[in-house]
Amino acid sequence: MRLRWFWVIILCFSTDLYAQVPNRPFPQHVPYTKGSIKPNQIPQERLDKLALSFYEQWKKRYIKPGCHPGEYFVWFERKGDKQCVSEGQGYGMIITVLMAGADQSAKETYDGLYQYYKNHPASHPYLMAWAQTKSCHDLDKSTATDGDMDIAYSLWLAAKQWGSTGKINYLQEARKMIASIMHYEVNPHNYSILISDAIEYDSKDYYDTRTSDFMPSNFKAFENATHDERWKKVVDNNYKLFSYMQETYSPDAGLVPDFIRHINKKPAPAQPNYLESPYDGYYNYNACRVPWRIATDYLLTGDKRAKTFNDRINKWVRETTQNKPDNLSAGYTLAGNDIKHRYFEALSFIGPFAVSAMTDKKNQQWLNDEWDYLVNFKLKDYDYYDNSIKLLNMIILSGNYWQ
Picture: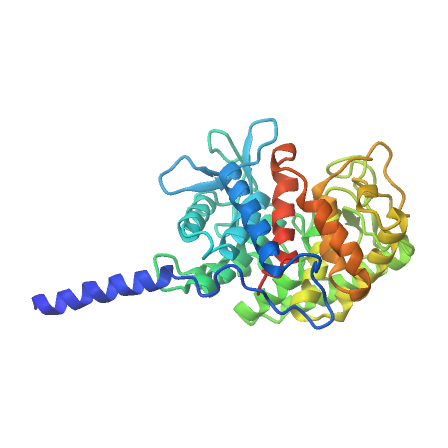
């Protein structure tokens, strides 16, 4: 009997130890879609080292212990009472999975970030309340859809990175969360993406969407994880919507606004102060993420719709800056004009334009210059949003983002 229990203990210990070993340790050097490019003015080893160095700085500044043992959250950093938002939690969870191997404590950190998410549920238990105060209380029980989508995607990555036989069944948790996103954060009539689970069928914004919530490579992973073919409808319908917006409102620049309204009738950019700012109908601090999200779909899956969308943006941005990254502004009208008084550097705009450039070899010199420009900005000079997007983009740009 003693011998039997000895082998049971050894088996459990071995299984848990095996689960700690990353299957895809950083760096991965992913073979992106044929014809796509990476910065080539420096060796691959240097690309990896710069991404890892910035990760180490980022982690030291932004990963903080929660109010309960074993919890971690991504620090929101900005003035006010918020300490964390689900958007940042999603960024941090994806980043941590991808940097496993180079970071020996990545799994411990990831599990702590996961625990914080689980301890702050929205009204629907597998989704996350969108923001917490410095005393760890939820501001309310509604969600921010983009945060949930990245957290769910990170769980799918975690299942591939560490398996699902340890203390957390990552695959099971991913599937539960993906099902909840489909049920509560996707419009079942036209498969547009709802801004929050708080928006119901009789809400005035039921047929509105935030453009940066369109994450086609995430959605394709969700379909793989759950075999739910409705995710294909989400991808197809939103690509059609984005193509319409480019053709109708931004034929020269190819830009989309932060928010789109009335998708069921005649889609149009949101009016000023629709939700966040006077620039809700412009290419502003939400839409700036769109080129990165859509280019990633091309890099990972080769979807030609993604390349077509980004080709127009790449042509415009190179022309409007005269191929000089330091001419980039922090915001544009849909006609492609600078927003007044936005002539400053914003990493959340610079990084996504660099990722967008990866879709075509014609952009090689522009991409090289964008990389050099992006990596030279110091972490201390920017906030959580700019620095987190910069890091995610550096991981992609260095060839280390996988699905």
